[in-house]
Length: 151
Ligand code: DQA
Image: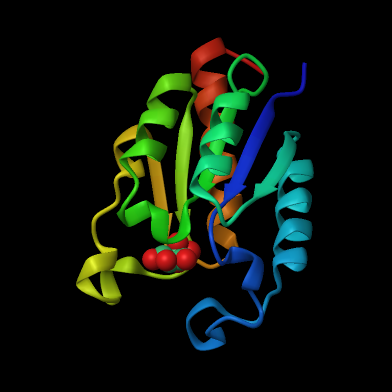
């Protein structure tokens, strides 16, 4: 059975391409979705993509993955640095999870350094742009292989 990964993008990521291109690049959110779908096809994984600007909607999406999805990739945007509720949601469903950031948080403002969601993520990638999502998919695939011997 093909494994299913939920890819969650949080607030303002729908503004990619318009938003601070010197930091986030010129790829639009629609292009990012196409990139992720292509990377998933390459890895023989199924992806479901979800974007919301609302913390509660992100929590609902994580909870909805329980029993339905095999792993989660999350770029929680600014909620990364504020949301214990998102961390709790990830810990509740206890699926293998990977954290992605387009920009390099280490090279930006101090308030972007802490990540609450990271405590629930076995893998974290930042500063690699869209490529980070491909790396996260590959890491999740390896996790699922390790957990099951094969997929
Ligand atoms: C981001 C980094 C966050 O600090 C910021 O609030 C975002 C995007 C990134 O992908 O680099 O919205 O998660």
